[in-house]
Length: 180
Image: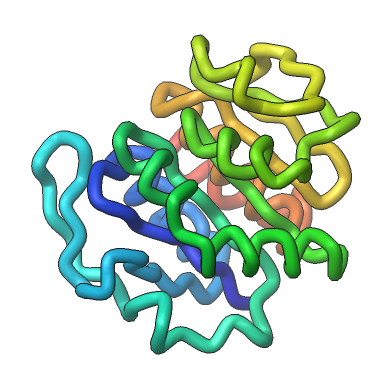
């Protein structure tokens, strides 16, 4: 199974890197995708990473899940990328998994993906999750949509993604590796 994690300048480093790490520990193939047109992407706290590829060169046809880390202005930059928004809508309508944490659920809210769904986000962004019932829980899974509250809950968020794609037993195995 292939998971795509999208990086925009201003992304929350903890949310991106910890999610990637946990997904890979869960035996998932993870591709990091820069939406900047350049593989080098700088996070909200000045940490730069090199993505596996750029949006324009990636092949999303066999993906199992799209993941949006939060952070500001990272989430706003993700929301400004029309190609990404079209891809998210396509995946959602096809019944594939989409996930976002922290401020990034605002992208899903703007697309109408959260209408009638339970969702979580970083406090203060609730009004941008159009149509959602925001819970404030660390993680919410509603259908094929998984949302997370913020960087303090990134392990819970990423483990929920592993559980969705690889099963609860695999998620528990991964969790046992860093929660002895």
